[in-house]
Length: 239
Ligand SMILES: [Zn+2]
Ligand SMILES: [Zn+2]
Picture 1 (cartoon, protein in one colour):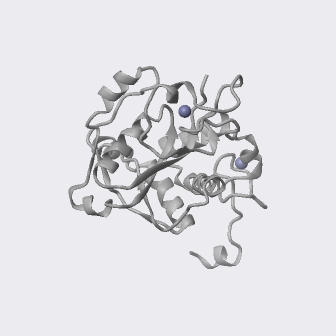
Picture 2: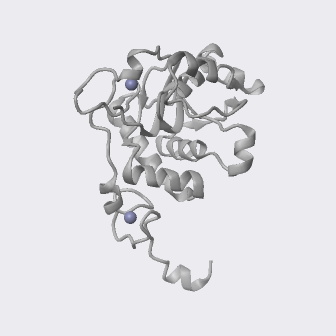
Picture 3: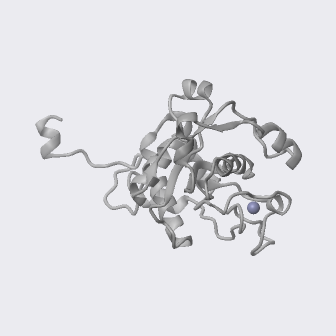
């Protein structure tokens, strides 16, 4: 760092709108952009997604027909508008600084809905397949997981391997989803012992049907985890 930058550090800018930040609630994103994001207000009690306007509480249509192995799924944001824009920017343009405000929101939301953020939790990001990781160069779920772990004082470990990527699952029925997902994950051979008796906090960027998280949870429970919950930045809106 040159002396000039040390004496007069450049003013921070919002990584979404590029406006200068004077004060902001979260790091790297201004309060105007934060205000533009939609938060989950009527959440499905299982998958945490936004319920349709006609439904105030209960389970969403997808959760009514699928058995969830996860303890819960929580997501602060609705995947639309500004939140969608920010997540796409993180995922496809490697604007990795955006993982910080998103991770901060995730931890705040988790603390709000769960009294339990004990050290027993092991943070596990949902992995990408090796092929996709090579193309993209990074895993956005890993970046979010690192922030969550740091902010909550937890340990993060890459426990899972994704043997192959799966196509979008939203339009498939339960049976088709299970078929597509079967065998998509496995536990890293040398990490199996790390899961035994642990509570796991699975991290991903978006939850759409919950099936991918559910499949990952099934594998972790089979490996000896005592409980698996999931935390994502955003959740799809149920219609
Ligand atoms: Zn902004
Ligand atoms: Zn649901």
